[in-house]
Length: 297
Length: 321
Image 1 (tube, helix red, strand yellow):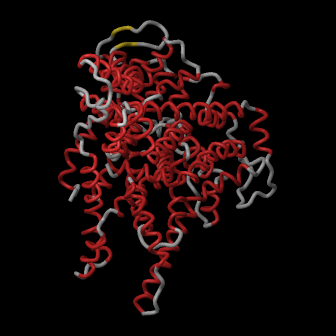
Image 2 (tube, each protein chain N blue to C red):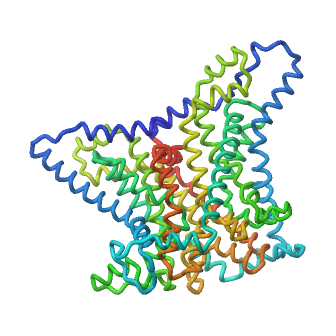
Image 3 (tube, one colour):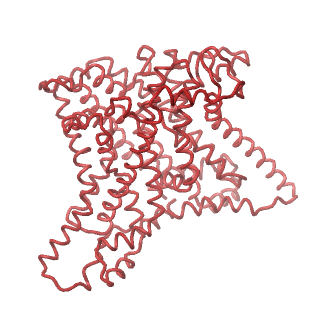
């Protein structure tokens, strides 16, 4: 895991240290480098434009079918946001999403860490098979499970409850796999030393292994939060009443209700993007590392 | 990448790592120690095993059973055997929604792969501010599909969307995008590619960075130009990352739903109806949970088959060095 980051940062710092010399070859290289910068920067601007446009629209009250788009809001204002929170239970919706995301993240951290410890440190008969089954669940699309899961939670009386939305998210094979990989990198000698001092598995797990896999835990936390915050199909199916809805479901509904009021729809989108943006800015390293690692299995 | 993988594999080892045996503990009988150990294993395993059995494996089996019944989620299910499967396989609509799904994949995959590769190649050079640039390209990945769909519905609004306004400025009359049956799927593809470009880019970038620069230098010394180095050195060495991107894209592509639901709802006139949207509609709109389960099993079988074929075929072109 560390290898990827060093490689990533290594090139960046290398470029900073180099200075252009004044030979013709270097001048040609400089020209190529400028051309490359232009292409990559223009591409980045194009990629960023939809976000900019979302923000501008949300600040342009009355953006609808009749208005013509302009690059800067002609008459900027926060009316769309005010409307969003006053006409809809929008604060509640944001709160729902936040609550579900926080609980999902915390529970997934616990279930993933404990399972990963069992698969990394506790041999038992059939362990490889059980781990294989866990991994295979990653391949099962949620869509296959939706109907029986709905029926099951209906039987438990949990449709249209927070618990119903939460339960199926409690264990995720991805997190178990990620943390097991990280735990396998922690030298067993550390466990042995603690064991000689009289520590049992729970102590080793808590005081030796977990502190050594903090980056992987951070990566999992970000992904679990993101997965829950952005999830759509299951909350759409299981949470039927408006005051229990999550942000993506409410946003999808908003579109039907206010087809022409794009300022309101975009204001809702901005609110959905902001927390992820904040987390991303703080934890960019872990997010990128997490994605890069999935490709390096 | 090989070096990296090799090292990791050596580190990981999969051997039994039974440690923490109660060396310094007061002597206990063998049996009580074994019971204690079993309880420890269960304590670590059950928090994840219970939800996985209850909410993944159980429903998986249940889906197979439901697919053999006629059921509207309310009244008791009626056993119909393989009738749902027979109906689906003879209904031309099934072929159509699978074709739409394949259309999505065929449009989407080259776009994200070639786009992601170009950006990764660009960012893999000495570039000022590359962390920031990489961050910008990656930003859509952390955005929800619903927001992506809504934002693109607005960008591609046929009347006064910004894209058609810009096109009009150049004297081009823009298409009806999501409102036009012929352009609905391309609109969804465009939005999806925008969202996933950064994801593909990061995976390919990690792959590029694990290529030994000495190999590229050796090719340069031998007189290979940029394109030659790309096709003869970089791409073959990048094939494991490419393989991963293709496998993941196909798995996700067959399951495409959120953005379709929010952008077109499968319309106009069913022009962008995909498999999962159909599963959703069958269950919650038409009360045909049995048929929906049958369709979801068909989808799972297709995904499984496609994935297995790719894994089998990888030896022919994926170079693990």
